[in-house]
Image (tube, rainbow, N blue to C red; front, side, top):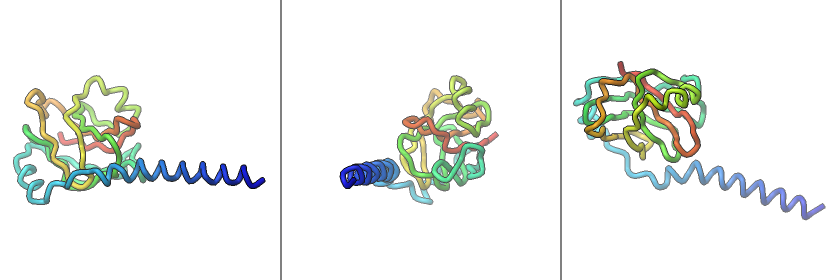
Length: 155
């Protein structure tokens, strides 16, 4: 009787440790977030703004964003926060999406702009080949787990 209990308790602890590691590791290895002054300067050059909100259909307690997204020709800036997680990517979409199903259905019409490596404020450079005025929505997506994080319509 004692051996199965020990095995079960060790497996439970291993599972909890793994889950906490997946959540905590991105926070521990994240670079320093851009300062409010850097965000403000970059946001001042933006042509469009939108809002990340926690109340989107597929946002939940572990997958959310909040704050103001500023979209310019050279950078996309968040003055706000994202739920921590691994492997976040920023996409531009021609259509507003707020679910994983919508993202997967429309992914071929989107362009991946770059990586999001910080969870409080970010600045993502826009490649010269991307014209943000051809899109309407910023989407944050977790590539590793195929999870919708947040979206903001900016035009």
